[in-house]
Image 1 (tube, rainbow, N blue to C red):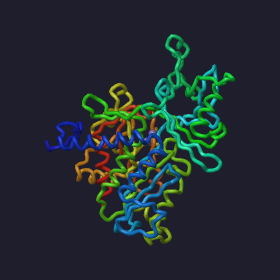
Image 2: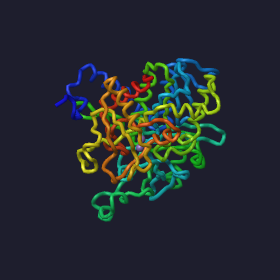
Image 3: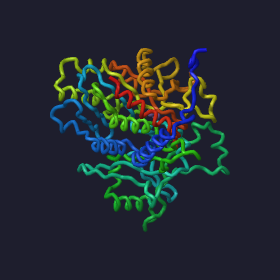
Image 4: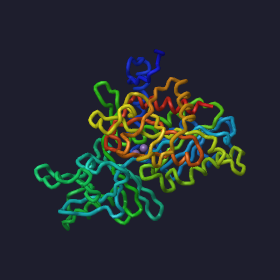
Amino acid sequence: MEKDIINEKTSGWLKIDSNLKEKIFDFCKGYIKFLNVAKTEREASKEIISNLKDCGFKNINDVQSLKEKDKVYMINRDKSIYAAVIGSKNITEGVNLVGAHIDSPRLDLKPNPLYEDIKLALFKTHYYGGIKKYQWTTIPLSIHGVIVKPSGEKIEVEIGEKEDDPIFTITDILPHLAQEQYEKKVGKAVTGEDLNVLVGSIPNDDDKVKENIMNLLNEKYGIKEIDFYSSELEVVPAFKAKDLGFDRSMVAAYGQDDRVCAYATLKALTDANAKDKTIVSIFADKEEIGSVGNTGMCSQMFDLFINELLNKKGENTPGALNKTYCNSMMLSADVGAGIDPNYKSTAEENNASKIGFGVELNKYTGSGGKSGASDANAEFVAKVRRIFEEKSVKYQVSELGKVDLGGGGTIAYILADKGMDVIDCGVPVISMHSPYEVTSKFDIYSAYLAYKAFFEED
Ligand code: MN
Ligand code: MN
């Protein structure tokens, strides 16, 4: 039989070269650091910008004209970032784009969050994106975000991360009294209105706990209760990102969807030796709630960025934006579902990603009969395969779970709608959309190599 006639899939760790293993582990040390300081889209934006600046990128608003090798970024309302390295070819000949998202599922405080019940103070929350609600209970939580006063003064909040910070938690009923809860379906056992965060218990001299907490917040942040109206405070797991396993081969952390691909994209962008094509990265917000809003991928802001590149490179003529899009290619850098040994029945093994087996390509996402999928063309998949194979990037092609069991989507279709060739390409995750997601270091590094190879393609 001809060699390799059967596509035998193997772990990337199998007989791995010790140099490569060291590179992978080193890369993931940086990744773990990034995760621990970038738990929200605002914090991720800040980290990404600081990295880009260190690598010589400039704010596009501060640049009059663009030429080959110039590096620029645009910040969209402190929540999403677009960045580019200009190539020698015309931008209208197409860009190589890698786009990830930096928002993750979380609990947002409601506009009137603080209340008192049986002499305990709590925050009401409204969940953002889909973590199973019961998973939010009895874990340490931290609060991150901003409070903006009518004067424009912005107060940044981060509490629950430092070693001596207090943390917060959402309580759950003890098993001894859980008979009614046990009867409920798991999706209904904890409801949205049950996700109230415990924040205090000492009353003031008038026996009011809420007032005492409000006083403490006033002392610490200089805010009044009404200032919650104009705040964005996000409750996230207070866990630290950690090496997972005796062999330290995996990463366990909150928010790996999709900051794992965002980090790999950032490093690929700054490390790539791009040739003639202009290379572009997206770090989008609001993916988890449908890519809506002015910081989401559906907004006109990305068009503005590309238009600015065209303007400042002196290439903008009628139709130039459309032409750029139709000639461009993109990796939608988002995570996939790694098959879980505890829940094998939800996957069809031949078409499921295995963590540690390399970066994952999804030709299509969607649900049911591929509903909502942009479905990459075979010609484009072949091109991406060639790019990866030439640079020895280990990859696997898979889909999300068994047919008709559920589904999901990414930002891929939004750019495909503009006329680009797009395929989803990211890191498989176990326990995706949970407070503590699991990835393989081999796949994280493979994603970095994949994005870098894609940027370096002409
Ligand atoms: Mn995602
Ligand atoms: Mn997600």
